Image 1 (cartoon, one colour):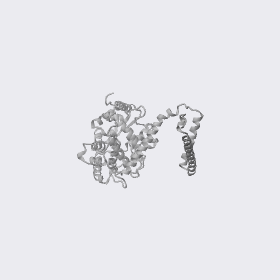
Image 2: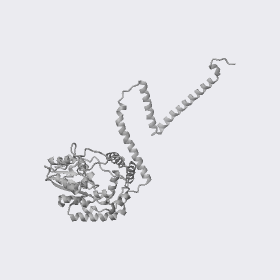
Image 3: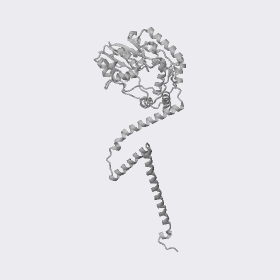
Image 4: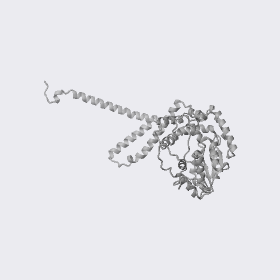
Length: 437
C-alpha cells in the first residue's frame, strides 16, 4: 500500500464527520461505537470494531501526528488500513467520525477524498455556539495537561494579535468554522457539505443524535445500545484542581500517562462530585463572541451549505445563574482536592488488593484448633465493637467488659507489687548464701 492509498472498490457513499471539536462528537461517537452492528443492519459501515483499524489512530497517521513523549507504533499504517477496510465493506455507505479531520490542510483534505476513489464523499460538520465552545474548550485543554487560567485563555482567543500563539492558535485551528468548511468545500463542493447545529442548552441529547441520523439516513430508534463512556464535564473547583495538578506535574507525564491518570481517572472521579451550579461564558465576553457569531452565520449562509438545525442556534446567550469558570473559593478547592485524594486512595487500594488477594487467601492454612479458636474470639470481639458504635445498649455491654478488664488489670498490678514487697524483706546477702552479721 502507498502512504495514502486510493480506494479501488469503495462504497457508493462515504460520510466524513469532521467535528468540530466540542460539538457533541464524543457523545455521537460513543453511540455509534456501542451500536456498530445496529448501524450495519441499517446498511451503514462504522469501522473500528475488534480487529479493525481505529479511526482516531488513522487520522493521526494521515496527519503525521504522534502523541507527546510516546513512540506509539500502533499509528503507522492505520490510515491505509482504514481506507482498505472501507473499500471492502459490502454496505452502500460508510461513516468516519473523527474531529481531528477538521485540522486537515487543503492538501490533506484532497488526499482524504481521493483515497475513497469513486465514492461520493459527503462532509458533515457539527457546530455549536462559540460561547459554549470557548469555556468547554478551555476545560478540555486543562483535562489534556494545559495550565492556562481562564483569564489568560479568554484574553488570548479574543485578541487577533495573539492568534499565532498558544492558546489562541490551537483554539482557532479547531474552531474557525468558516475556514474549516472552506477547506473541505474546496475539495467536494458546497453541495456536499452539511452543517448540523447543536441544539441550545436544555434540549435533549437525542435531538442532536436525531439530526445526525437523518443526515446519514439512519433511524435513531434502531440504536438501542447505551454508550459505555461519556466525556464528562467537571465543575469550577474540580477544573481548577486539575489545572494546578498539571502545574505541579510540569509535563513529566507523556500523553498516554496523562490521559490514563488525569483525564480518564481523576477527571472521571471528580465528575461524580455534585457542583450545583455549572460555569459558563462570563458576561464581559459576550460582545466579542456575539460579533464573531454574526460573522460566522452570515458567511455560512453566503456559502449555501445544507443546514440541519438552525444557524441561529450558533448565537451565544448568557446562562442565568451560572458561575464564572475561575471563581472557585479556597474552601471549594480544598474539598475537591480531598475528594480526589480519597477516591484515588480507594481506587488504588482496590486495584492493589485485586492483585494481592490471591497471594494472601490461597495460602494453605496452618495452625490447629487453638489458632482457629483465637481467631473466632477476636472476630466476635470485633463484631461487638462495631455494634457498640451503633447501639447504646451494645456500648453499655462493651463498657461492662472494659471495666472488668480494668479491675483485672488493677488486681494483677497489686499482686505484683505485693509479691515484689515480700521479696524485698529477704536480706540481699541471703541471696548470695552468706550469713548476716
